Image (tube, rainbow, N blue to C red; front, top):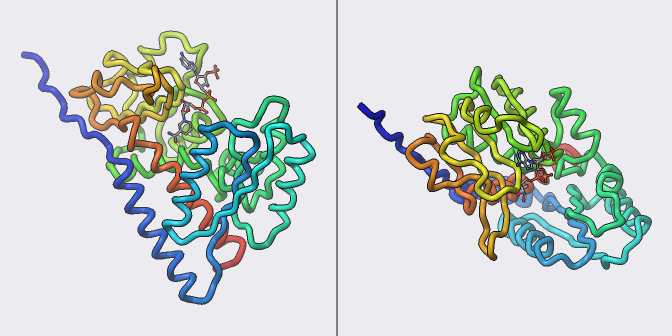
Length: 289
Ligand code: NAP
């Protein structure tokens, strides 16, 4: 007798993000009612990449909606290393700025690692400085990259068991793959990290109770990558003929995965929401509020 198809829940990342934003707005409202200033996020944009400009506009709107302040520092694509570092240093020194993020990617010729590492660790809301990454590795409290934080919230909300589960992460970037692997391990999952040199990727993925795809290869994860009943998290965002496409073939994994995040309204809204949460966390730690 063929096995019964599994009912697949499509994660509503937007609804979860809106719930958390409502709570954040209430927290900011309480601070303002107590006579305190609003938390403030500073965003540095170098160059005129339209995708980056659109991400920044989304972050600005998200700040406004929860009552946080945001400031934007725009530099031309021709800005030198010294120009960008001067802006970061100015924001580091500004007591009214709680969170700083430098929008990536930076134009060619600028070293993103060097520039992000100059952000004051107390304001590092993207969690990308060596200080923040080191604290995460050591299991110490600190600011953690937003996309992995959002993934953990989704797994928590959908009651995905992690202790003792086998989690497979495809991708080993500093912004997604490495930190999500550490967070899953911290939650007592047994974690396997995969990358472009992994042999037999499909067979490794098929062992996963939790599969996180953070690759940028459209529809890499097909039905035969997924263990029946797995939780599948699609982080990837690629443009295919002008259409946003994820790393997971969402249609193909229906009836196999227990939950799957769609490539729209999945992980993306949670990422921005965790940026707001990190900004509030940085504000509280800096001000003692
Ligand atoms: P990245 O820095 O480009 O890293 C991609 C990773 O995937 C690398 O570790 C690479 O391996 C691995 N990889 C590439 N091709 C592979 C293949 N065929 N099989 C197995 N592994 C492969 O990317 P990222 O910054 O982590 O982002 C990953 C994706 O997530 C992108 O599409 C990005 O746009 C998206 N993203 C979405 C959000 C969101 O909020 N939704 C946030 C961040 C990123 P090597 O290390 O061996 O090169």
